[in-house]
Image 1 (cartoon, rainbow, N blue to C red):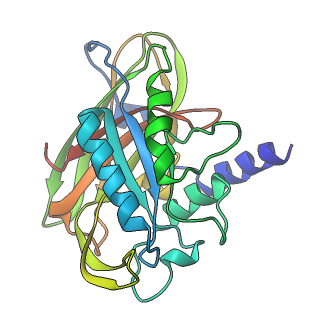
Image 2: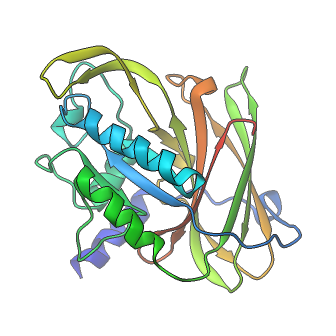
Length: 266
């Protein structure tokens, strides 16, 4: 009952704007289904001395698995490792963190694969990320298709986004659009206790469509459909270093079913 109440509260807080069907849903030819792309949610903070090592682990996994893995770094304000002179937080990172049971005492670094809990546990030490990723890759089912193209107006600081989604069978899901910024120059506490003021923070979640990390509900069917959105780029972001990450989430438990990442204008 408590968990159900939490879902209801999150739903109210993150209710996304309803977009007219004729403005965003366009039937298109059915694409060939693809394999699943996974997402590593890397919880981190600039005051966390072990987080640079975790970031190296995330980078190594991404290099190993290529397009099969997307990394998104989250700096939740609810954890003291993110608090201080530098601010890489965003409200959506906090929403995800609190939903997964994060508190002010949750040890950092921490990570999760695909917003999925194993034995009611969401957070894993970076030494466990590889094993959790392999576990997720071994799940055998037919995954939905997802593709994204963007067109950016760098003068107006807006992104036009087109999403192509398809499922071989009817599937109640949610479509979320995240804006991620790479190579943010700043400071970071290091394992030796020093502070590196020439550090580059990677894959940082900056914003989401309509301020909602869970996206909006959509019904996928056995015909491909295209969804269109326009998203502003926050003033603090360097658009040249930004990426769009699109996600299809399970309607009931928010598990990530499919993901796609693209540079702006790709």
